[in-house]
Image (cartoon, rainbow, N blue to C red; front, top):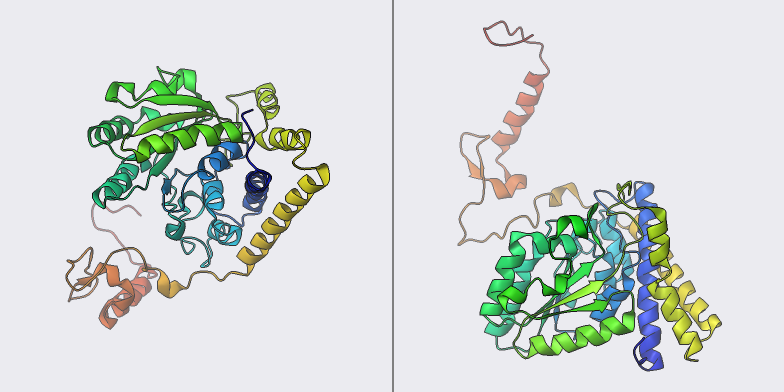
Length: 374
């Protein structure tokens, strides 16, 4: 392991990783209890890559991820209560309960969200970096994505534009060896992913994604390269202990492989390093873990107590609307069509027709005309 930073920084690194681990474990438990809906992708085992990266970013830098990003939001400082509430689909969630696990967002902390489309965040990251360049700012965008996304068309297109326009962006591949259930040897002709952008003129480096200090040092160097006006690519070798999602039966890997990687556990190994260096003792490490437990416990209570989004808000946040904008949708349920994005403001006649139509549907009509099955 590289040289350790000061004691306070080490405590912060361990605290963040411990919080993410505990949060993800509890998120999995709440998902099994049907408290969290939709899909659930856990980052247990990948904490060092997340925390090592965010710990050297500036507050005004941008971070954008994929759909395994509960930990990324927590690492950027988003409250665990709001992240858990989003998983629960509650109004106090980071996206008002509308995004769920795959779409955590915190614009205030410049965490620009998780995205459900593999590789979908790559061109968006280029856009964020272009905005920084256009405004003559020295902010950097860090784009984190999985190994599978490096095979998408978006990857090549984004690398080309980033290199062509000298965009201030660090592309970071969280290489956990599997694109869903397909091993990297089977889904990528080039398995040294940090070399995949060399053909576009973007240099890359592979780092140990299970070592939080190694990640810090590697990403810090690449942030400076990007801040100087050159895009760069980092490959963090990491591993997820759980399946691709909560519904993954994990038939593509054996338990021995998982146990082997657990020997490299980023939290356990970093804790051991700190005690051996005399920076923390076992009691202090236990206190850090207990604090993480308490934070997550309160997050669940907060999410349980948070209200459901009101039915009246169903159409909120769907469209950017204004007096100078055109119609986004048309509702033709009434003689006078109205704007579909204002569904709650539909004319009374539209609601009456809808209600009468529902009543008509309940009638047992004798349909004997040709072509209609009984």
